[in-house]
Structure formats: structure tokens, C-alpha cells
Length: 197
Image (cartoon, one colour):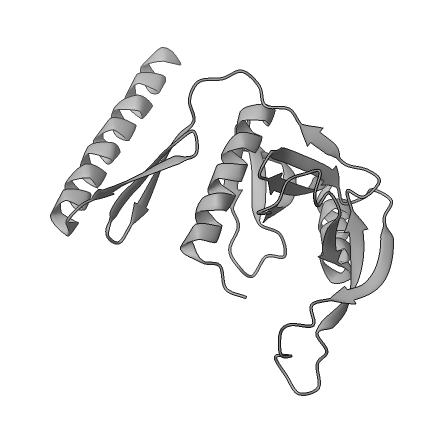
């Protein structure tokens, strides 16, 4: 399944909360990578994360299923690079995370309401069960309002503490704003260079 704009926005919100708790930055990995985000402090990657967003609450659906292939790939990446690998889940009432190295159960599972992509494939897969007996719920830290600016082809989506406002912009307005942002960034780099002398 391809990601929709709503999927991407929900993922951005989830990772914003994670980074607020863990005091890090999230770098979205290209699609050919097996996991979603690299978590960074300074210039150092300390973990890789897979992110899932749920439309239900933690109490309703704490059980989360991930393909066994995804778990094996996450463990392989973590061990080869010496990094922690996490599954991060955002429910309607909070965040949770679990290390991909955690103990888990395995079963045959899948959806039966979708036609298989290929005549020879089945709508089932070997899946792992996470969060049913483990995992940690992430308590939000006291912090300032979370403000996200998401550029789109029809303007800027402004998200403040989960509340969305769309600011329509023309191509010229978007380019002018981008130019101002570049100027501000260059000034920040100049100031940092002065302070480090």
C-alpha cells in the first residue's frame, strides 16, 4: 500500500512527539530501506525506527502485528550497525515503543478482505505479535506547543498541537518563503561560527 498525505502527516506528528521525549531528530529514510526513520543526536544515529499510526486507543488495540520479515530485517540492521531498533506506535491516546529484540510470539495472520496482489500469493503472512505482553507507553513530557510546518503543492499545512490549519500559497509565495528560510538558516550558521571561535 502506498502512503497517503494523511499517513505521512500522522507519521510526522508521531515522530515529533518521539523526538520531544527522546531529545533527538528524526531523519526520514528512503522507501528502499526496510525501516522508516533514523533517530539522530548531533550527527550520530543512535537508533532506527519503524512507525505505525493507529486510529484506535491503546486499551482497545494494544496488540500490534508486524511481518516476521520486518522483524528479522530490523534485527539484522541493528546487529550489523550496532544500533537499537524500535517499533513506535501512535494510538489516539498516546505513544508506545518496543525494541525489535524483545521476545515475541509468532503466528499466521493477515487480512481476508483484500484480493491478493498476485494469483499465487495469499492474503496471509507469518507475523509477530508485539505489545500484547510488553512494550512501554511513552508519557509526554511538559514542553512548549508542538508546531509543524508541512509544505505541500497547494500551500503550507500548519499543525499546532495536532490542530491543522491550511495556508494556501502560490508558487511565487512559496519560493519567497523558501528564500527567507534559507537566509535565516545561513544567518544561524554564521552566528554559530562566530560563537565557536
